[in-house]
Image (cartoon, rainbow, N blue to C red; front, side):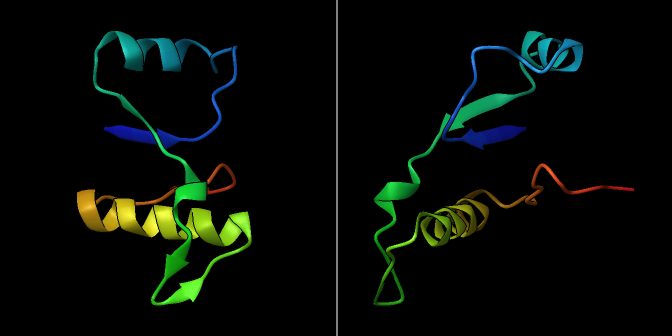
Length: 74
């Protein structure tokens, strides 16, 4: 499993985070949304739009699914 991130806090979320890291089933990948300056020939100025492009490019390259912090899975 891969986790792409831009900001990483000093404190970890807790025991589940520690277990995932200990089993090496979680791979951390740092990404910089500021590197996405254009998409389909259009200039991207807002950082949220740049982050959207980075997300889509990661999904296109690696597959998988995207879940935000406010996503509830059932």
